[in-house]
Length: 110
Length: 114
Image (cartoon, rainbow over all chains, first blue to last red):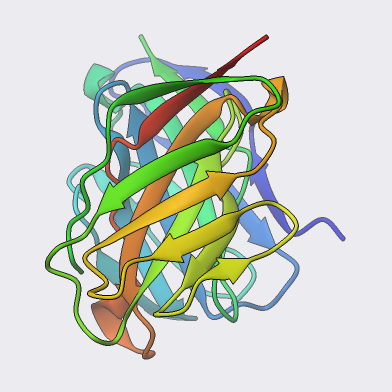
């Protein structure tokens, strides 16, 4: 039972490059979320999705794009990466009650 | 969602009970109290949740005051592996829309000392 798989686990990219972080779930949960975590800020919601083809902005959506063509996948794209987007990114799904989190992607933008 | 207030950090001796407080004075009647923890370099992990009554599971106990304005997470016999950041969150139970937008604060860093 893989649950939530995030890939890659680590990524280094250059300023201005496009990069996509992948999130895959095996539970068929309707809701999926992307958070970023930075020192001093805790977890902040970037985007969420209530179902396939339904997405909405969270607290810090600027500079990010999401899509949800299939229930099980929720990729997060940084269209033109900036140094301020260096962070740890967590994907999560919502089942009956608690959120389930992936193990994160550590992204460094140089 | 109601905002929560937690201490920035706490210490606990190994084998003793760890009591982590959370204030949520603006909680609404249909909002649950959830607790998560995050061990270094891992994704947050669900611990327990409750509405009004005290709850217990294999990981912890949750004590909610009668007025529901505060709660305490209790780890009965803390171990070194319980060192983590603990997040208290409140959210509505009903489905739909932004009700599922959970806001994580900065949490409490619990350090369990040998």
